[in-house]
Amino acid sequence: MYVCSCFGITEKQVREHADTGACTPRQIAGACKAGTDCGSCVRKIQALLGRGSCPRRENLEPVVLTPATAEVSVVELPAAEAA
Image 1: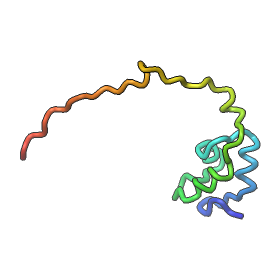
Image 2 (image 1 turned 120 degrees about the vertical axis):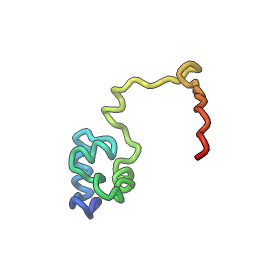
Image 3 (image 1 turned 60 degrees about the vertical axis):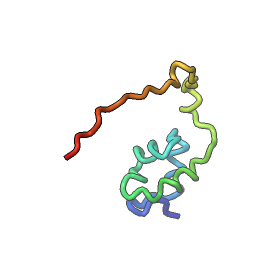
Image 4 (image 1 turned 60 degrees about the horizontal axis):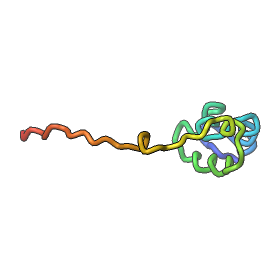
């Protein structure tokens, strides 16, 4: 069954790219362009990838948010001039 009509990419092809290490829709797009034209297939690709383990994700260090990294700064902008 076709996943990406724009480039003629099938479920089998997406699964093959996933088996070789593509873990995200962006990585699938980099491998075969699926999802880069109209974008209607991105959710299908996400569903095919699922939430399974990904060797690339396992190698990444987790990001820990601390109060210092989670802080948000508010910057006041000058008031717009009336036309």
